[in-house]
Length: 504
Image (cartoon, rainbow, N blue to C red; front, top):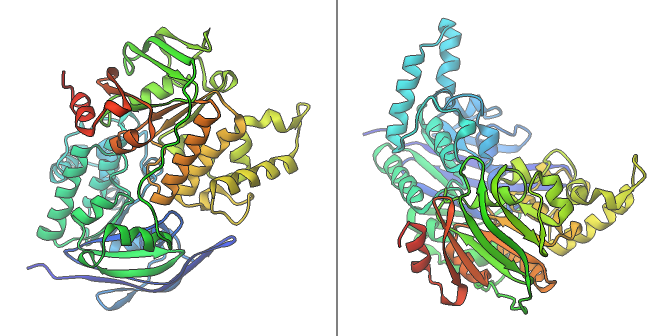
């Protein structure tokens, strides 16, 4: 029988400019258990795990491994104890121009180079395939990571963590980019790691049913402090949400019903150059929220990016108010009245090293300029403060760097910048990925307000309950094309899943 390990964090506190992110937090996880770490956006979950993974070294408090004090101030300190963290920001954790095998076996390659000054490439690829087999995935180990889907990148990160001698594995929002089948496979792996390989798993997720399905114990953070720590049987979903938010919460998302006007966007026979969008036809009317759904990989993101000019068009056309839409570049899309909130917000939706106000005003910079060289920063900050208040963005000021905000507040910034731009068509690609129930409600209310103003909204998501909650009409995508159209009132989760899976 493998020895049991116990990992304890005691009295952990940390501050960033203007923010006390954690305040005297105690957290314990043991070998062989799956432990949920839950909280609203900005509660401190990811920060606590980054301390555990050695990403932050300026914290106070102590960490104990099997009763002995551990000095974790660098990622290598965590690695030596067998602690691996798979962070939310997939793209920043992988090296895009290296292969799948090289990314998975990165630590082993570094160690080989230290000892032998050369690498046995055959061994690297063979070892990577063995790890992937353990994870239950099949990928060509010679594929460059930059050519993988978001879901595939996520699994490569998990495989990398398991390529070393892992005692504790932290998974920060791992199911956000995964399909239902991929999520079930991840849960199978998590259970196998805990039950058969004695690994302690810390699972961070905003999807409450997942927590109750796979976890045994739970810790809830709110405003940087622990508010609950017990077994999962001792709490209900409703109570969990109330503890997260510090108030009672109505789980339903009120749909704002507004009069639907004339067609403002019509897409005819749209084909993307490399085949990632095929013969797509649909319409969006004024005040209408159009749901675009399907399984992960169905082509929703590719369609959004093609409309926004990020992917080249092979054939077909789009008409905005009856006039041809030029889909040549994101710049031209913005000029013509389109706005896109992309799925990968840190990579494509925000500038993490810039202040909040710069991010919020960037698409509308011409409104704040006088001549070619002068930007009215005072006006920028003033309008930014209005948007921060309107969206409830948690930040000490409009001058805070976006990198220091929680994932949900970064998403609000990615959405908020388009409010100032005042577009005609708003395209939301998985806008609630990685946000808590409170932030999700805020985003839904914002989208409802856009519809009320007569804007057209495309809401692309693989979360079918969300699609049914918010949309007026639903298009279902399968294999890069639209295969079914529903009035939302006539659609069900089962019928959407049937067409999403290729049913006819």
